[in-house]
Image 1 (cartoon, rainbow, N blue to C red):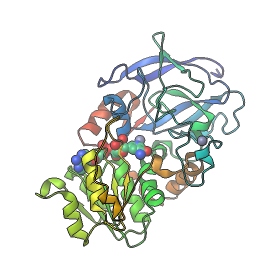
Image 2 (tube, rainbow, N blue to C red; image 1 turned 120 degrees about the vertical axis):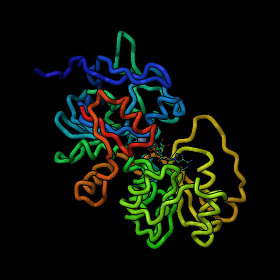
Image 3 (tube, helix red, strand yellow; image 1 turned 180 degrees about the horizontal axis):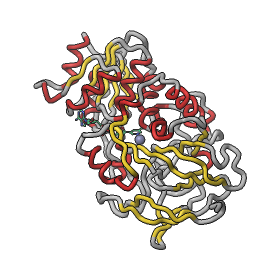
Image 4 (cartoon, rainbow, N blue to C red; image 1 turned 90 degrees about the horizontal axis):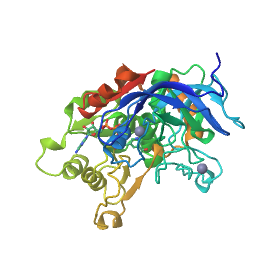
Amino acid sequence: MSTTGKVIKCKAAVLWELKKSFSIEEVEVAPPKTYEVRIKMVATGICRSDDHGVTGSLVTPLPVILGHEGAGIVESIGEGVTAVKPGDKVIPLFTPQCGKCAVCKHPEANFCMKNDLTKPRGTMQDGTTRFTCKGKPIHHFISTSTFSEYTVVDEISVVKIDAAAPLEKVCLVGCGFSTGFGSAVKVAKVTPGSTCAVFGLGGVGLSAVIGCKAAGAARIIAVDINKDKFAKAKEVGATECISPQDFQKPIHEVLKEMTGGGVDFSFEVIGRFETMMEALSCCHESYGTSVVVGVPPGSQNLSMNPMLLLTGRTWKGAIFGGFKSKDSIPRLVAEVMANKFPLDPLITHVLPFEKINEGFDLLRSGKSIRTILTF
Ligand code: CND
Ligand code: ZN
Ligand code: ZN
């Protein structure tokens, strides 16, 4: 029996309060309105940004259905939708691409002004939610909310991908892989023969390593305090792995000594002020570029000495690896399907959706890279 136009009752992981476990609840998912799309989720990764949503370091209205790294199949579409149709395989976009704003029209920029990240409302573009649980409206998370059997997104926040794409793998293109990879190839523009340092070897950091390698870096120095991550880092392209805890002196000094003055490109893929400063300081004072990828704790400031920049360093950051989401995801999915990049090593665990809390425990204990939840 068709569900088109009807409310769907299904399971979703609801976060009622900060720092609590997810509750698997029965939720009602309203049909998509004009220019909206309802998706049956097939797989979703667990990214550290979801955990930042749990701890409150990424501010988002509660109660909420988190999750932003998913893939699924279109169940139904609202009026006026032309980009996708029922049955299409799709990836929801946590950075939309409206195609009309100043950012979308800019040839290089990607952080569409219709994003729900900088001033999150936790709603659809029209300011309302499509989720209800126990009579209460439940918020959306950065236009995606993939921790639900069904979700509704705006047409500007979804893109069609190859019908043959393995969704339980390419869901990583929805965040972790593209964010890390793009930070290297698109944001830093890593050059052949260069030396890179990547701080933080989770799913996003390892994808930055993959990007550095694809761009032809000669040395890729991977930095993490959890040495269990080193084998994987080497598998995807790191040439050396170091832990700051093995040295008395600050790690930027160690890196400068290792590289004769500093690396060409550095990446902070953790989300901590200290490591952002270490990453900036370890790049060469006259030509180094450092990219902030990790999400810092909300509404706090970092003080730094501008001399670090005055001598020639470049300090930048980007959401979603600087990629325009709608334009880039279908291509990245095709490249993954052609085995251009090693995505499989990033997937350490696959769990049924109901075991979401177990998946978060694995992330918090440092035992997983990416856990994929399947529906
Ligand atoms: P994950 O937690 O899997 O990896 C972080 C890694 O950092 C772990 O291996 C830790 O052991 C390591 N680490 C922690 N503290 C230190 C330290 N002091 N020194 C060295 N290493 C340390 O996270 P992830 O890979 O899923 O995400 C990484 C960050 O990227 C995180 O902040 C997340 O919120 C952010 C992010 C950004 C974007 C974007 O668009 N810019 C998108 N998604 C995620
Ligand atoms: Zn993410
Ligand atoms: Zn836009």
